[in-house]
Length: 318
Picture 1 (cartoon, one colour):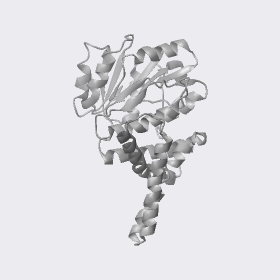
Picture 2 (cartoon, rainbow, N blue to C red):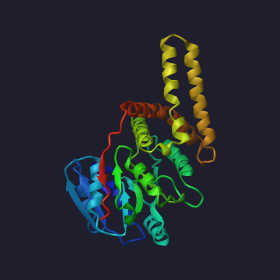
Picture 3 (tube, rainbow, N blue to C red):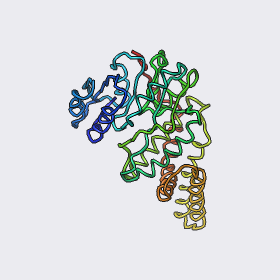
Picture 4 (cartoon, rainbow, N blue to C red):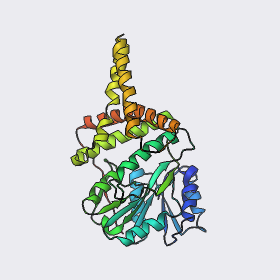
């Protein structure tokens, strides 16, 4: 577990580990130069968890995750857990059993679902439910791991390098799928507490997604999916609406607005099989439509770079 200024949610993640039915584990926490009491919170669990807390200078998320990986005690499996994600009590038991039962599985991933008790939480949870529904099949085979709550087979990591520019989760998924199975059980759901709670935060989340997706496609052209292409539509429609308003051409602005409304309606139609309250469904459609304007900006920014800003560090298996 890599930690940076996560005092607000860290206890929730650690309490969930205390409640696990599977007990044969050791927790390594790398504190990435936190300015709050995160390290002290983790150290306070020494009597409840087999835990080691390592304090380091602030070097950033990617370095902290790699440092936590490299300092973890040798074991056949490696759990990567974000410090704001709370696993259900049966999670480690089920994950370990899946890896024990099938040597062809490299990763078993829970689904980190946004906490619905906070602003924008229900809307983001609905969008995540749609992603989860499309990420796996009826047998549990998945395309993408959820890096904030995934159990990995150490032997599957040997010789791999993880690229930060495309997103560690995406890069690792692409590399593992070439030789191994990835399992994402539909009913294994963790709670993600540290979700954006303001519109600005949601837009930043979508913007980062756009940057990562464009970088991913540059590195792995075969990863292109229709869903990500469709996410680019709101940006030109929004720009067209703004241009129509600025040019005093109301019909252009109205047409762009109507197409954006149609986009939201198409999202509702595509997600009709995902169970949700009507209010959450509508909020999800609106958030998805507005957020993808920021997604398009991030995608465009990365596309204009013309090259990948590659940052690599080895995923050390021991």
